[in-house]
Image 1 (cartoon, rainbow, N blue to C red):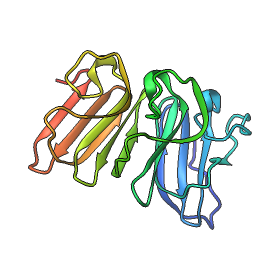
Image 2: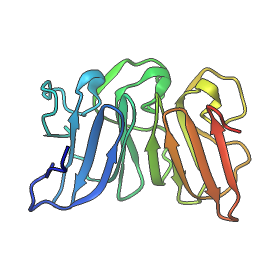
Image 3: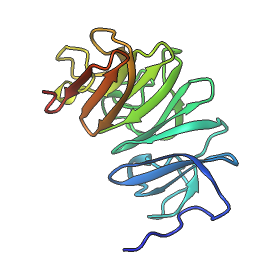
Image 4: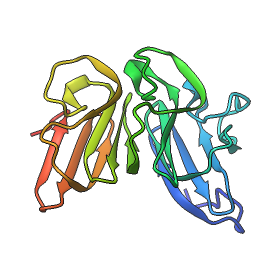
Length: 193
């Protein structure tokens, strides 16, 4: 198909993320918007029950980055506080509760960490702190939390083993790869090499 305008042509998006079932964007003029499949609360607004309808995420928080996961989404404020919503399988929303079920609106990630980058995958999310350390939370399928343990899940951010400083990283479903500040490439999770 041909590309179409998804937000008003007068709207500038400052952050954009898409995953298998939905897409979210932070608008420069304010507000975070999601659209796609509303199932599992992944769009962040309990009033959004129409497939494909763009709707503002139900929060007063102002986000600067958004990350769409398979069944949940996460976002960061300008101060680095992480918030997540959607299906919290294994604690994917990082709110300290392992199997909370569906969370329709953004909930603060526990631990008072300040993140500069965040990504969401399949029932898991990870972030890099201002100190460049990687933390992950949620379902630990295939070791995607990077903790080096066989723990089934962790509903609170856990440091990735080795406490190495990361310049950046990427996440897709149950697999994470990152580049350390010393240019070392590391991967963990499904097929983590």
